[in-house]
Every structure is written in C-alpha cells, then in structure tokens.
Length: 321
Image 1 (spheres, rainbow, N blue to C red):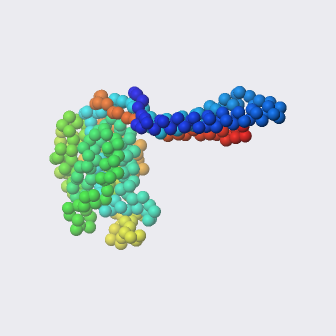
Image 2 (image 1 turned 135 degrees about the vertical axis):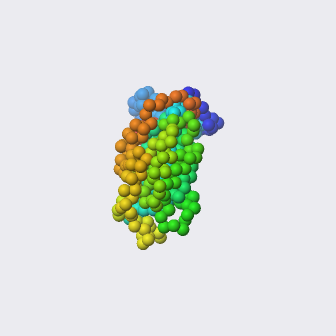
Image 3 (image 1 turned 60 degrees about the vertical axis):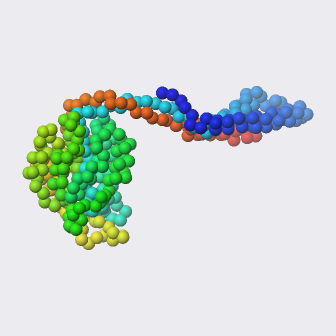
C-alpha cells in the first residue's frame, strides 16, 4: 500500500493561503487600533486562532485535492481452479416482453439477476454466452468481475447477434445447449462445470434425450434453469403491443421437462436465494487458491474537497469577527 499524486503540481494551489493570512493580518492591525481608540477589550487569542486555522485549512485542503492523491493497494485474488460456471442468456425477441410500456423487459431482469448471482460467487470463474438457435460465447469463465459486468452490459442483448433462422416465428431451441458440451466452453482443469440458463423457455421442440446424454458425459455439466415470464407481458413496438406475440403458458412445462431430462434445477426469477444455494451446492467440494494479485486505487480527492466544508462553516458562523 502506498500514496501517490496524479497531478502533484496542482498542490501549488495551497500557496494561495498567503492571501487570506495577509488579509487577516491587515484587518487585525486596523481592529487593534480601533479597539485602543475606543477602549474596547481584545477579542481573545482562541477566537483569533480558530479563524486563522480555518483560513489556512481551506486552501491547503483544496490544494491537496487538486493534486489528486490516491492510495495504491494490492489484493491477492483467489480463484477456484476446479470449478467453472457459464451463464447462458436467451436472446430471442420474446425476451423483450414486459408488463406495460413502463415495465422492465425479461432480458433486463435476467441481466440484473445474473449480476446479483455473480456477486455471490466471487472466487468462481464465470463466463457469458447468448442463445437463440445457437450458443455464442461472449466471455470464457473468469474471476474478472468488472470485465464480467462490462460484457454483460454491452454484449448481452436481444438478437445480438441475430439468429441464423430469423424467418421462423419461434427462434429459441434449448437443443442449442448441446454446444456447451461439444465445444470448448470450459477449461480442461474444470471438473465441476455448471451452466445457468436465463430464459422464458418459449422454445421450439428439441431432443431432450440427446441433450441430456451430452451434458452427462464426464466431466458432467450440471444445469440450473431460471425462468423469466409473466402472463401479462407483451412485446412492444413503437408504443404498441405486437399482435403476433402472446405469452406461452406451456413454457413452464418446457422448463420443468428440461430440468428433469438433464437432472437440473428449475427456478423462477423470484428465487435468487434458492438459485444461489443450489449453485453453491453444485460447485461445493473445491477450494479457492491464490491466483495472482489485483492492483487498485482509492481516490482521496473527493473527501479532501468535502473536508473544506468544516472550516468554511466555522468562518460563516464567526463572520462577524
């Protein structure tokens, strides 16, 4: 840990303390002559010292703030090398559904859910992928939480990229998850592998038996399914609900059926606590090891600038000195 200054030359602003001190000295000389002429008592050294201290503190604090001091710190990063998770988002158009124009879309709620879940797994490498009629990786599993958040915010969105079979009414197929088992989404050292799917599960039919056999090949890929769906939701375009879309109640059976086929867990978007417990249970047994260091900086400038409010308040209170 150490202290450094980004703009050290800006600390010269503190030299402006000479101006208020000179003004106080001039004022005191004149005030003393007036008090002697009128026979008034002295104001006292304590009150005068408080005023001088306040006048000195303001430019000094502002000068220090302008120099932008930062505290450099190094933290050991711990990482599970035996476990990895992949968050897969359904990015089909139905994920734009929401309750009313002011409502929050399914994809927005899914991103918020994933961000909260990621924060509860600090030492587990987590990756990101999108799914429609195919699975596309955006980030391979990593413990880089800021990178995860940036990728989640910028890369994960509806039809980013558009599906290949864009002419079909229903794009999503859960069968696309087979790519997670057949392609290199996980590192060879990851013995505990987990896929968390965020979807409304309004899917085309797929071969769940084939998918289940692929996911269960050693090392097996465990699954957790989270459904984002409400019966009153609609997809809006230019302020109007699209007539060709209606929420599919059968999506609940699709989720439960898929969970049963692959031996996974089925949850709703209101089950963050239960999902967290299930994920930790599936990834239990491993141990986090030191995997490098992280460098960080803590800026002191905002706090130094706020610190000027105290002496300034004193001067305003004693403005008739």
